Image (cartoon, rainbow, N blue to C red; front, side, top):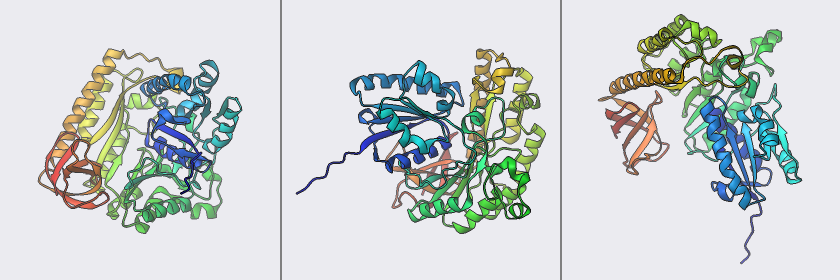
Length: 459
């Protein structure tokens, strides 16, 4: 009997940060799969380790640096091992990683993943390899992501890349470039393939999905120069959302992230109209103070934000709402902090992502504003925000008790193999005892109890 030997080099991708990074890792995996490499979960015995990194907060960078340090021992044991850094840290720290510290072999920015095979060839002949050039048109729309870490039920579909908002605390415009939208035909093709493969839910991804605008290609900022025909046939996010909802009625649809200044009434109307669009909106606010929002260069006021919240609750009464909040931004006073708590009490978010401000090199805030809120005060304010959010989350989830909700089963519960877990329409995690169901089933669950983060039900 003949046996075949698999001579493909093994690679492992370790991903940090946002959902966009996880989506990008699937693109990188697909590129490597098509160039003679084989995916492996065992990074210790891999030939190539890639870290897809995040620069949004200092803690994220420290985590990556610690991981890179641990690879030094691996490289001593295996002289053929190559280590690369992808994503946002790649663009920002390319010279330090490659030349000063010499801890990696290649550095690749978010718009240069197609060049990875060429860069690896450079590494093989002993050269440092780097490509962090930002693109005005790269969307990877023609690449079929590998879904190497997928549960087979839910998948990310990227619809935009980059960001034009220039919030003073954020590195994204510098690491991911200008905002551009993906050809809707390629989006539909990708979702069609996912449906055929048995996926039940998609999440449309972008730094700012509501500003999606397709008029035949090009940056959003150039739309004013488009022809009348291009403008007449252009596709906004609300139109794209409806197109997907109508053509994929059997799939659940989510999207993230939204920015308050770009969310239109049309999006809310489309959400309310179609049952398969999940009723959850992630709507970052960052601060409850107009003074701080202005320093952050956010494009909305608290008054406008509240009006949008009121509109959401009117058009979609059962909509779940979550947030991002940064506390301890430069010049934030105790009164500014209290305004954030007041806004939280006004909205009563279902959940949120809450952080202390950490100065990011290269951002406008780092250049123009002194990080002048003491660490002790930042931590105390963060604790107060977290405590209040936990109260609101528990209160909101308590309202589900005694009611039924539809849940898409995603996997076994981490705490018990006797329980399923999945999310409801509002993006709340639900756990319930197993019966004769399977992952991917859409089931009706009676809610019996809750914590501040989870609904506990019976099928």
